[in-house]
Image 1 (cartoon, rainbow, N blue to C red):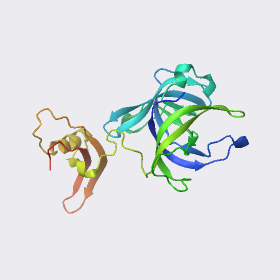
Image 2 (cartoon, rainbow, N blue to C red; image 1 turned 90 degrees about the vertical axis):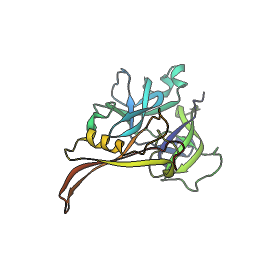
Image 3 (tube, rainbow, N blue to C red; image 1 turned 135 degrees about the vertical axis):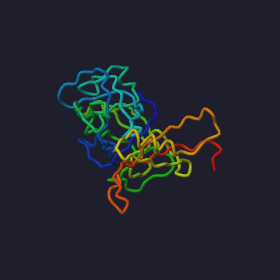
Image 4 (tube, rainbow, N blue to C red; image 1 turned 135 degrees about the horizontal axis):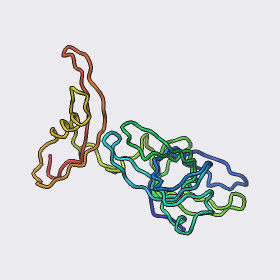
Length: 244
């Protein structure tokens, strides 16, 4: 049973499995924010099923979160509904996660490295992908092995090398299709600096245009001849239609 098409970001690693029971590669995923949705987690490695959703935070911007709908001790313990989820991963769930500004779901899934099948790629292929960071598009599908039993592998349809995770809020948006602005706060107030930056975005002729703003960088300016001591926030947003 195959789930819907999604995109994963991580490091492709060539592996060998017991009895040759492997696709030949796994994709090592970075820690993923997870929304447990009141699920109780016990110790040990777990298999989680769910869907990716976007969460928007002032500091972290748009973050893809795995919203968990089911947790099991092994892939074979999932229900039929769980096996039909778009995301099925095995790893360790850490709770009590704290991040700056409290911008966290409070939990992460770490150590997830699903098997990835690169034999059915459409279009461009990467020669020797071992050890390279990539964005992989495809879907999860269950596969029964004699020794490993049920495994949910990721069947890849496309693969592209990249050095950073995709910006899920604005996929494949070119720099020349975005506008940027920088705001400041002498009181080191994030709200003041962000408001100052938003006020500098160019005017638009569309009366009900909605700015969907990303916080790209937060820093400070200290010292210099002018004796600066202020917070600096750089933002960007999609360019309104009709702008040069």
